[in-house]
Image (cartoon, helix red, strand yellow):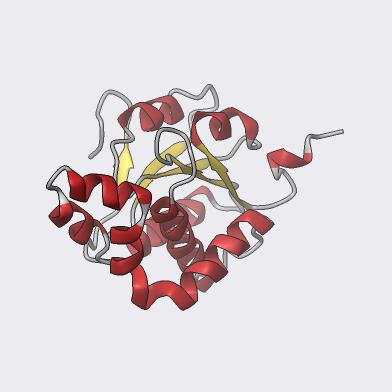
Length: 179
């Protein structure tokens, strides 16, 4: 029997950190989500997976662009494609900002008809929708946001909280960090 934590019966899945890269069922598309950190290692590990998925970096700033790019990739493949949302977290632990970004991307995927989502994705999406107007506050009040503010980096948090400010998705390619 397949491990139910792999979420293999769903098209859109969600997991945390490096464990999600191998714990979730194999997917043709992986979106590494990191709002306030640096996810270069996690993104490189996703690109290096043996089944060579298409990898995007997702944030709040590019949530709609990422959802559109995922949809376009599925259309280009000519059929239903599994999508893993892999949240970087804060040193591998829960990070509210990444969960909200997963919800924003999940909402965008749902709006485009990609809505056969694991419960994990549904909870993130439904959590995001009513909290959209509070993103700046939630990010600045999060553990990661508070830590960055203490380092004098409050402007980075405000910048990261701008929903859909970046109209382009970020695709990770072999040999590059991003294009």
